[in-house]
Length: 577
Image (cartoon, rainbow, N blue to C red; front, side, top):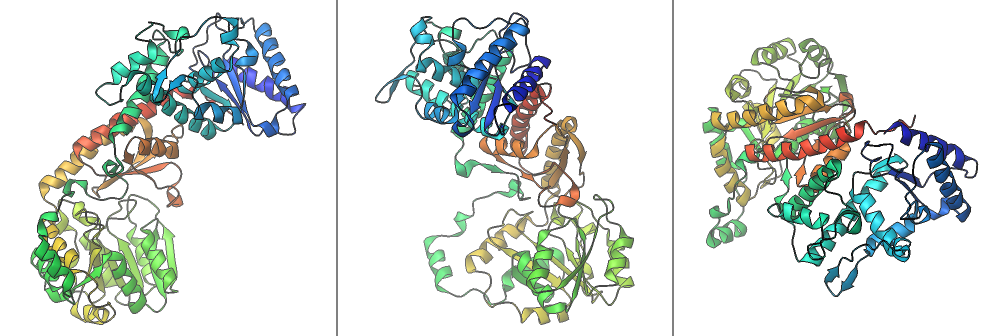
């Protein structure tokens, strides 16, 4: 925000405080040269207020108009002689709602006609002119000086939807990424009358900041138009999109009939055999579960009388399972979020019956080596260790880390995992426990028979052909993340680096993670702000899961626009404290 804007808001607040008990419901917006921090001495002072009727009376309207005129005089600024201040300075919120629901253009059925602006007193003081000016204010690079920025941003999105509909209906054009330039030209000039700028929609092509802002928003709308809900790219769930495939070919109609009309294998033996051959361990060491969560619940419910231990932050499912079965939790924060402290783990392990280690840790990527885990097992023979390897298959050297080959050697070792993340199959709910036969037989009695359907077993067998992930897939994932890391370096203070199928980034304070995620969602991408789920991490952490190289490049392109918007407004931001 430039100094003139700060001065106006400060003096206006002081003036209104004399007549109003509180200023809630008043929103002050700078637009034109003021909104983009490009004020010149020859410019008038472009500002408007949106106010709730409850916090506003006619007296206040006159007071604000008089104050604004005086401010112009004191700062030696000219006042727009074309449009009276009374017709552009103040909008009631109810009036704004009405204007956005009923755009100010002549409509004949589905056809819209955009009338050129006439520089006559009647037109410039008309309700139509006030409506058109509001649309222009909300769709150019305006800045909220005071009030609820989220409320005003919502109005801006609605105004852009109106502008898009108006242009589409007036000129019979459907906005796509292929005709953005044509659409932009229709914003600048009436193709029939050749009217432009202040005689048309108010957008001036010679204003660099206006052009840049329009280009970004038109591109945003174009992408939205081409995205269906099912086309939204979900990079929020740690699911490996490189293995996103169609498995419908597995199910001819006769196969479907048979699968539905017969009971599945009671113990999912076919999946056990596939895992056995992949991991070179006996099938009797496996217990197939309805996702890894069922496995955790079975272990916690049946192997533990009291205490469960883990370090935080970590996967939410451990605490949830402990709470469900009334087990006590002994936890401690990670002293270094990117690395496990073996001494801390050992200390907790001596006080609990079950120590859970997410390896690699979700969400921080901390990872233990085989030797470190073996030492913990040897030092704490009285404690069961549950090693959750759900994120481990993302490592190209999976076999250098997995503890599955050691389950017969250590009677206190249990490994659980899932095909949900790395093999892109969360909907199948296929997980497994791997442990010595004695533990498996004990837990097997607690599993509900037929817990995995025929269809899910069939698809799982096919999907497991990709397990563990090939070096090629792991390399492609990390190659995409390296490009993302380079791009994000400018906008972040910290990042994770271990191969886990996702990246964590802590955004710089000036970038609002929640707003960025909202904008990305509108533009067809889902990522996650994990600070709310894991407050131990601190503020403004986002998580981006792996996608194809094309998806990551598209994400970076959109995020570049978003970050630039934040940067453009940074100098205009107003410190309300």
